[in-house]
Length: 107
Length: 121
Image (cartoon, rainbow over all chains, first blue to last red; front, side, top):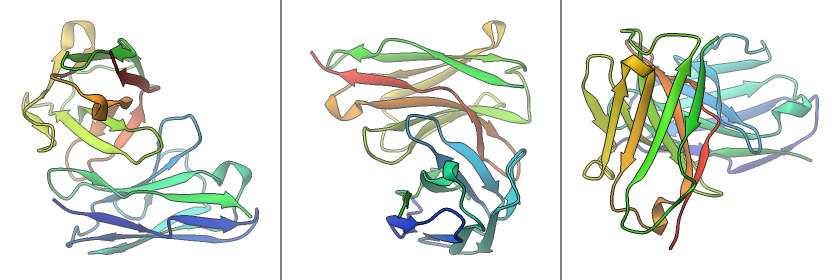
């Protein structure tokens, strides 16, 4: 099983700032990585797949990068709706696993 | 626009079977482009993939749950279902259904609204 490790666990930032979230895989997963945002009380929403491709309807302030074992999600200018929990997910093989999440909170 | 609507009981007794259904609207469940999955989230914790019913008819399950899980599809009703047997308190979670892309990118989107299932006598 591939273990996904996200850092930091919590990130405190202000609206308008640039946020950088990290995700590390325990072995190479090529670019087989997705990112999700989960607002309080809601289901997760797909943001990025293929490590760097924005999903339909996702604003350009979200960008993803990386391959192999190291990945990054960048939010260029934080909006109020971006304060939520973010998860990475690999789909390189079975079983699919998620990271434990990064909570992005208002400073 | 594809939507997933979940149904099923929110309370299950220990040792019994958890059963949930996900109804697909706005698209067909019989597509080779997509498969159908269940994911759960214990209160205050992260996401755990339970399993996927692949468009080919095969099912893939999380090894940690494999002996207790069955995912099935009823194409005539455009529905898919989850059964988890011999539940314990550790199975208490919000359960989500989701569409899963097949092929090169196996992402989950969209997701159902979630069902909180509590295991308690």
